[in-house]
Image 1 (cartoon, helix red, strand yellow):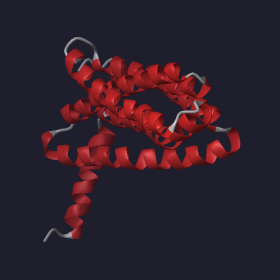
Image 2 (cartoon, rainbow, N blue to C red):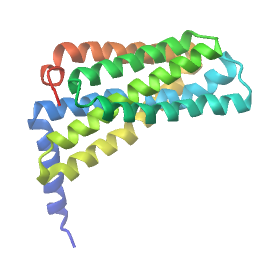
Image 3 (cartoon, rainbow, N blue to C red):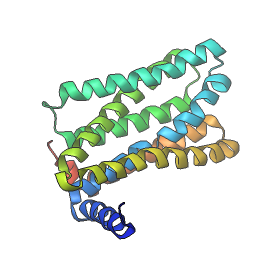
Image 4 (cartoon, one colour):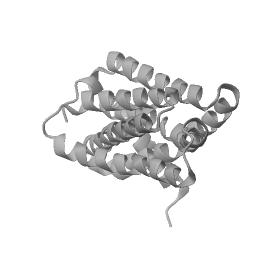
Length: 206
């Protein structure tokens, strides 16, 4: 049986590994920013499809299914281009494009434009998150890799849940379109700030 002190020490080692390595820490922050969009998409996209785009139940299913397919396509794209593009700038650009597409989605009432924007959002976001995961696994030392990846897993679950709650509160006061524009613009602004301040991530080649 593992003693509580041993568990605490192991957790501390994982946190210290992230805290003391600038690139690894910034990769975790990039993951946090990327997952900020997941909650609003889960909460707001069904409402957007019904109220703003006027899609039928079957059409809403196909519309939302596009996001899952485009996220997979983004992951495949990341594998294809990983050897040909610097990973850090690709992560920052991909997340910014996803934020811009999310904001644009909030302002459209045309179903075809919305479908194209949703596909762009999923592909860009899926590619960025795939590169971030690969970067975290590469940068984490083997001795603490499992704990570091566990921290990433916690981020991937907790951040969308929290941002989804915030999106639900925001939509009641601003409406679904404006709420999406707010979250999308916030993501673009965060990536612009990250590009300026996070030098190790910006210069990371992969």
